[in-house]
Image 1: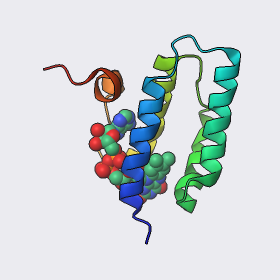
Image 2 (image 1 turned 45 degrees about the horizontal axis):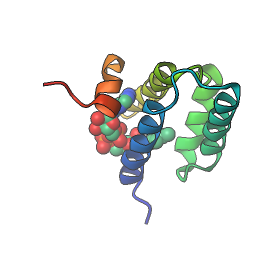
Image 3 (image 1 turned 180 degrees about the vertical axis):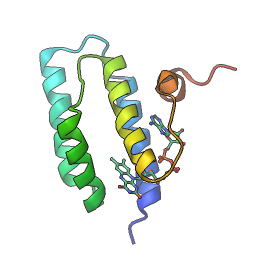
Image 4 (image 1 turned 90 degrees about the vertical axis):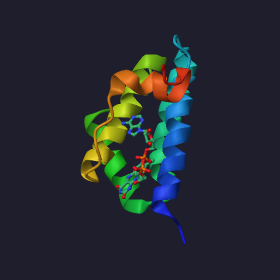
Length: 106
Ligand code: FAD
């Protein structure tokens, strides 16, 4: 059976990493392609109610594909909406590159 939590962890890993390596100055085509990818993703994510809530959230808060920082922040905030819904702690979005791109500094 589908393990929603395992799927979620792996999917967030992919989504945040993809955002972390998105160009800082994307072309128009890269921006429209990323918007399409996110839209199509939200139609096929294999957890029906998760995908449905995501589509609702995206209506109020559309993806920002203007650059790497913006896209990473967008995914961070979208993930935080899910964290809030599940009663999980909010993630500090100032630390999103440290977590998903550069590595924790210590
Ligand atoms: P996860 O939430 O999977 O996070 C993995 C890691 O990401 C964390 O350890 C942390 O290091 C990092 N992280 C946490 N928050 C952020 C953030 N805001 N920004 C950047 N990095 C962060 N589950 C449900 O039960 N109901 C739902 O409706 C639901 N909707 C989902 C929608 C989507 C699009 C996705 C991808 C997953 C959804 N899930 C849902 C799964 C859920 O979000 C978690 O993945 C799952 O509960 C496992 O949680 P976790 O505590 O292991 O960490």
